[in-house]
Length: 295
Image (tube, rainbow, N blue to C red; front, side, top):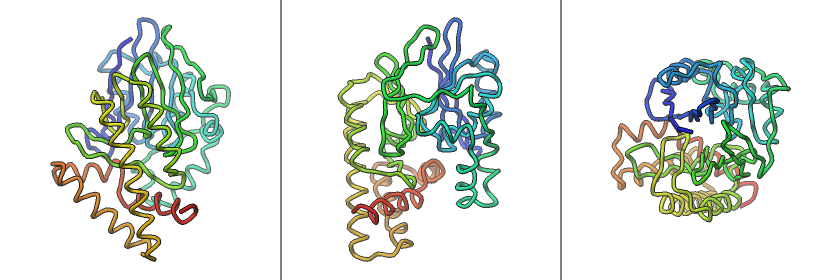
């Protein structure tokens, strides 16, 4: 089994969203589909590895956010079996609530950013629980329940590597800055930290991030990300306790994260790419929402 990253060139920009091709001798599978807007790039990326859409028999999505699973329905309609967290399965079969929610946020940009999210035939969607196994060309992939970014989040474990979705954060290639994936409405710091600690205990040799690419310094990455989750929660909690209005929370969060990235050597160009992959204003909103509900 070989593992190949497919750069989905989200927003015509390289290195923001990856799908992962698992290519065996007799079967191929995808981990993540990206959004519908990136479908052409995904098909082109598969073709570069001599894989046609009809060759893809299994599709595993870490969670149902549009940047990870927006294209899942299309693949299900082609005959692939789609595997997803039990909390997310119904939303792939009937994505109307997801689409309505995203449309309220993105408005006229919805189609340009995310493209179509087609309903998946129910018989083509398999709901997974923690520890459930999927076999691709004889290789076992295990779903690990990893909440914190979302309650419907799985990481997928194959031997000594892990496909992390968003639970190990956002780290663009060539950069040392770790951006906390904290989109509303389900950022929850304690489950998040526990999920990261579960990955740490496994001593993986590699992580494969959807945003973006392969991570070889696994322990240092995860230890740093655990600290980052605690930092952003603590910082936003302090601002909320001070009575800081939401617009200013977003401004402060963006400024602090920008300064952190600059200290770590991130260029302004790469900072802009981080904003496309995991916008600071959106993350500030996710953390603030949790703090206002729970502290």
